Amino acid sequence: MSITTESELKGMQKASEAVALTLKEMTKFAKPGLSTKELDNFGATILKDFSANSAPFKTYKFPGYTCISVNNEFCHGIPSDKKILKEGDLINIDVSAELNGFWSDNGNSFVLGEDKNGHQKLVDASKDILQKAIYSIKGGVRISDIGHLIETEAKKRGYKVIKNLTGHGIGRSLHEEPAEITNYKDKFNLTRFRKNSVVAIETFISTTSTYAETQNDGWTMVGNKGGFMAQHEHTIVVTDDKPIVLTEMNEIWN
Image (cartoon, rainbow, N blue to C red; front, side, top):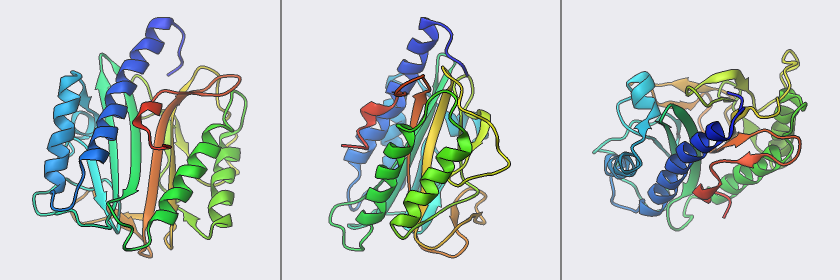
C-alpha cells in the first residue's frame, strides 16, 4: 500500500506494534523444554490481546498462529507439541497479523541460550545485512540494487542467499506489490521503491543452500543442499530519506 493519510499511518503503526511486541515477547519466552506449540499459543494470546488476527491463519489456513522453524527448517515451520526446544537451537519466529484492515509482518532468528552449535555468527550476519539494506532504501532506489547489496554482503561473510524467498509489499493485505523483493540482483526487475509505500524487507542468509524446498507437510521449507538459514524482517515505510521502521520495537537489532 501507499500511505496517503495520517490515519493510514496510524493504522499501520498499530498493526506493526501488535506483531513487533508479539515477536519480542515470544523471543523472550522461548526456553529449553518448551514445545513450539506452547510458544505459538503464547504468541496467539498476545495477538488476541491486541485484537489482531494471525495473518497466516487468516489468509492461508496455516495450522498455527505464527511460523516457528527450528535448526535445519528454514521457514513456515508448523508449531507442534512434539517439537521440543533445546539449548543451542537455531530458532526462527515469523509473526504477521491483521488489525483493523492493516497488515504487518516481522521475523527473528536467534540462538536459544548458549551457542553450542555455532549459529550466532550466521544470526549476526543476517541482522547486520538487514540493517544495511533497510537504511539503503529510499524512494527511487531500484529493488534489484538492494538485492545486490544483500547478496554481496552475504558473500563477504562466506554465506549464500535463498533465491526463492523474498520480501514483499504489504499493508492492506499480507502480500502486495512489489511481489518480490529478492536477496539477489534480479537484472530483469527494473522496479524502484516508491516513496510512502509499505514493504516488508527480509534477509534469507544461508550456510550452504540457495533454494528452499517444501516438505511433505505442505508448509515447512528446508534447504535444497541442507545447512542452516537465518531470517530477519521489518515492515517499513519508504521515504525520501531514512525509512520509517514500523516494527522497530521488536528489538531484533538490540
